[in-house]
Each structure stands twice: as C-alpha cells, then as structure tokens.
Image (cartoon, rainbow over the protein chains, first blue to last red):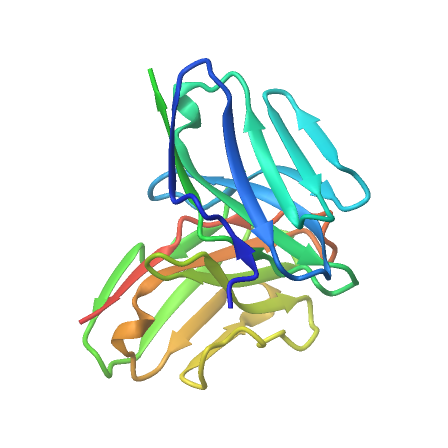
Length: 114
Length: 115
C-alpha cells in the first residue's frame, strides 16, 4: 500500500522553464512533507520541506505547495537548470513525537534539456 | 566534515548466504535509520535507532533481517539466508536527534544483488 505516490516516473523540461513535480498522499496523519533530490550513486539530499500549517514554502528557485484537502503537494523549480537533473523523492512524516521515520514516494526522474 | 559512509558500496551474494552491511553515521548524530529501495519502489523504512532507546524495528520485512548499533555509533544491518527479493539499494541515514526538525543525512547506499 503506497501511502505516498508520485505518479510521474519521469519528466523532461527545457532549461529556463518551470519544472513541476507532483506528489499525492493517502494517510491523513501525515503533517510534515519533504522533498529530497538524488543523484546517481549518491544518497538523497534534503531540498525543502513544508508543515501542514502552511500551504507554501519557498527557498530560492524551489517552492513547495501543499493542498491538504486534496492530499496533494507539488515542487516547483524555476528557472530549471541542467544541474537540477536528478531523481526527486517526496516524503512524509506523521504528527507526533517519535515519528521521525520517513515514508517516501517512488521518485520522479527530472531531466533538464539544455 | 565527513558525511554518512556505507560499506560495501556493492555486494553480490548467492541466495541463501548471509550478508552484513555497515553504516558509519556522522559523528555526534544520535539517530540512525536504515531504508531500502527496491527496483521501481520508493525508499522503504526498515529500522530506527535513537540513542540508548530500544530500536523501532517496525519496518523490517522478516525475521531474517536484524540490525545493531554498537556504542551509539556504527550500525550493521544483517540479512540471513538472503533471497532474490532482498536485492535492493540499502541506505543509511543519521540525524542530530529525535525530532523531525533535524535533517536526515543519507549515505550513498549499498547495492545488494542476490543471485
């Protein structure tokens, strides 16, 4: 049972354009969401997060939007750069102390076309 | 500073053999996690250590899997009598403490192939 879903396994975007990666979740206990970026042969690295008390969090070129009622979040990258080519994982954590373990989606491979 | 390191980077083993995967967390990090990524799957939580507390083993898929963390630092994940479905990338992560505000730093992973 996949509680965090990334339905697009891959996405190609022209350099300079906006990249939009989507993520859906089913567990209503999740209240903290994270995006990780992964290059080949490396571990995932944290990119940006959002708490359920917010609907938007921005960090430079990266913005995460959360729609709690739809159980949907998205990561926007603008403008997209070739170095953004990587696999992006959406992850979630439930409310409560001791619930630090992450539940991940299957990832979306983003390719930025120069 | 040094990040999370894992060894070996690649391991090929025959079905039925035991394997040990090692994780060296970032110095001073009290929380340590094991995850795995099977082909076409997301990262799946396996086990979590925090300080001297009993580990959270709720993600271990079977009793063939076990892990220990010696001295609150290095951790070893052991898989006994390996099966082909155990083939995956095994990732270790560590964080400063038991709170989600602490970022989890991941190692490069060990790619396990069971033939």
